[in-house]
Each structure stands twice: as structure tokens, then as C-alpha cells.
Length: 123
Picture (cartoon, rainbow, N blue to C red):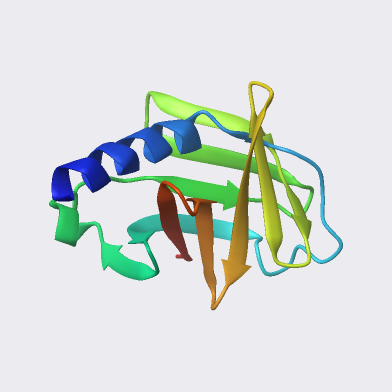
């Protein structure tokens, strides 16, 4: 199970790194700033990166008031784009594919019920 979750996390992290997010939302003040990947949620259970032996993974998303975002996995793996927040739903789009996340309890959950959610917390 740990190996499967680690594989899924790796896929989501790779998708996150390549994202270009679309639009501007009604009230984006809760999203503006830099968010750090801190963990993973699978089947309603949150676990930290340390739980997966991935404490050295650095992934951030920096959102601006103008609706722009910079997603950085490493110095060599950076994507710029835009983002859209509608109520608590964050839409993330890259290469024609849209990833939907939610903003709840001060965290961004990016993913889906089938594969789980990457968890980002504001720095």
C-alpha cells in the first residue's frame, strides 16, 4: 500500500509541477501567497511527507493577486500560469487538462478521490 501511495504521490507531484492555472476568482485573498507541499490525503486520512520518507521533497505554489501562479518543484522544474478560485474550488489547468482542488481549513487539497490529494499549506 505504501508503495502504491508513493507512486500516486509521485504522479500528482509531477502533474503539479507542470501546471498552469487558469483565471481569477471572486475573492482570491485566501489563496494569495506561497504554499508548501506538506503531505497527502488518501481515503480521508492525512499523512505528512515524512510518513512517506519524502521529507526532502520541496514543492511550492506561489499565487499572486493578479491571478498568476508559479509552481516550483526544483530550480530546474518551474511552471508559470494563472489560477481561478470559485468559492472554495481551485481550478488548475495544464496542457489542456484541468486539475480541481479545494481550499479548506487553511490548506489546499489538489487531486481527486481516486488517487488522493496533495496537501499544500501556506508558508
